[in-house]
Length: 242
Image (cartoon, rainbow, N blue to C red; front, side, top):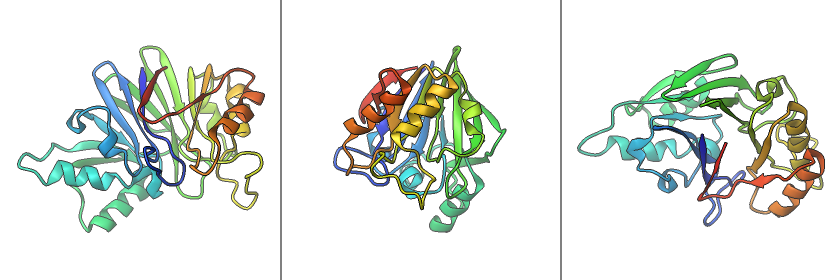
């Protein structure tokens, strides 16, 4: 399984750093996971080769490029056949409300805790996360390798159970210890990401969703201090194998 980091900037994009978005590839299967601003134009493959889309939640830094895909896949001489779109119901409601129509380029499949989806060579399992809006994390399995992606979340809830013993945990790290916001506990600090990854037995930890105003090297150091092994950073334009 290979993960292409299309974008990893937390909260908003920056020059050369699209917001959250990844292409997860197994064999001939390619799934676009989260569609933050700047990710559609930065996809590592021709967009018509995307087999499905998974969206963790409704916040624009994770889903606004669905509208770019809608235009690219719809308003052309040969519109794309509907692409499966897996997301919480509210994502579809927001998208269709903004567009004032149901986009025919997507075949919407609502997902929530306990749901599973088979997309080609990938099996995806979903779980509710600790965020301020309905959000799903996802466990990806292919060729006996496993990945867990947190989307946006705080540390509360039962979601770490689905991340148990994964080969790689791709985790948001919106906060550092000096920037934690007690009034909004629905994001992880880098240290919390490291602690949870160690507790669930993740083989590797990759940090993402770090805001542009933070020094990402500090986040890596704080995560490594509790994960007790090297931690990687999700860098746009790069890929890693699970």
